[in-house]
Amino acid sequence: MTLFRLFCLSFCVSVVFIIGCSSEDEVMEDLNATDELVIEESESEQVEESNAEPLHLLAYAEEVDFQLHTPDTSAFDVHTIVKVEGTVNKIKELTRSELWIIVKFENRIEDLKTNEFHYYVPVESNGSFVTDLQLHHGSGEYDVFIRVPSIDPEEDNLYYEVAKFKVTNLDEDIQREVEYTLRGLKEGVVLSEIVRGFSEAKETITIEGTVPDNYQAKVVMVNVQKDRESQHISLPIEEGRFSGEVPLYFGEGIHYIMVQTHDSEENYYYDAASFYVDNTSARDFVEVELYREFLTNEMEFFEPNLFVAKQLSDITYRVEGEIDPQMPGAEEMSHVIVTMKKTDEKDADVLYIIPVENYRFAGDVYFRFGPGNYDVTMNLLDTDREGPSVFYYRGIKKFTHHVQDIEDKRSLLPSRGIESDHPQIINKANELTKGISGEREKALAIYEFVSKHVSYDVQKWDELIFDISDSALLTLESGKGVCQDYAYLAIALFRAIGMEANYIEGYAGGRHAWVEVKVDGEWLVMDPTWGAGYVDKGEFVPDYREDYFDPEAAFFEETHRRNGIVY
Image (tube, rainbow, N blue to C red; front, top):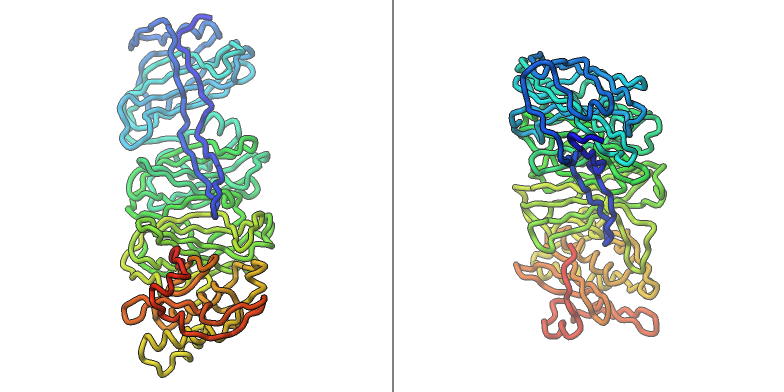
């Protein structure tokens, strides 16, 4: 075979690689790359570029009996559209059935990923081909390269150049098509006519299209890029169609949009089509990271959604949505778990639980640690994993916000197990402290109530009967519990009357929990569990003592070792 130029078409195209990490929450990591054409040059003949007519074909054209009917000159002027028509008479010997045509704008295109546009043109069974090329960036000079697949069976991914010519676009306006990858064309992915290759929009862009009947996934992915930032969202598929508003996440300027389809065998998402949008709005939308479960589109969030602002100034954050009843394990999904972490402060994280009823959930969580950057992760219980005195959960979706103009209320707001905003808790706290003016006296009244009201649940401790719904309210109603329940109830009562209090985890002959409450500006330690009584021969013996209300530090540290705060 006579070689002129050797090209390798790499099918290592853009991938969204989904992997699971497991700690207490399972994370999906997205891996992105653009469609990549790897070009290798062999030793070859050199053909001088010339504006002379007629068009000269390159050496490989003779080997495949390639003929170009239009254009027939090596340089000419047009208005945006160039018709390319010809034949490849050795069509049956080609390893692939598409030509690869590259249109290259000779000047650098600012803010676009490349100055090239790639076409894959089918060759009919009789060897003929015809297509219109759109000169994709307005007026100026363009180079057009036509490449034909190898006829060597061992060179399935190689293309050879057969022709090249220059063309000048006389039109000023940018008229760009949607650019499809070879994979996207073969799969039959089609974007609707409302999606243009280069357009202007404000804040969002509507994307709609179709996938073939044999497409197996429930969603297509959309990757939005600008500069070095990247964001994925999914669009659900119904009866072969997908449609949705996609936020232009990264403010004013040109965004590169890729529609990606799923390969069921490899469990990857590959680029199928791409286009550009110039966003005229400076608004930044919330950054969203998708996790494995959410890709199936079996869980929908009404709040927060994709159109929430990245910058917020409200301490309360609403979470509301529903679970698809057909989702595997949906009947066992009793709670949505929300973890909130202030990323610019060490150990500033908290967990909230929101009950699921009839597959729907709704509740408020809080940016309790003051102004800063927060990751808010939505999770579901991992019903496939069980362990004594612990529950597991896995990530669904993560929102990243910057929050400003809020107070630090880390020790005052409700959290998991501490329903300090519940009417029953508020009423009991007010009842216990009615007529008491001093904070220390209020603290002692609550300590005494919790120690006397709650009987230690020996069976719960012995058999490790812990549940995600354990809480202050449940402890108040049942009058029994273990150390965490004593702590939940005391802290909830304190916070209900505006006294800062925290759950302290540590060790006292085993895992243990107690309470710190701020009294007259100083943190006061108490252990209402040890103040309630003791266990003798497997039975709880009530024996109220004030030894563990504000004990001397040396005395307390003989038996208690602090590990940290759980907000």
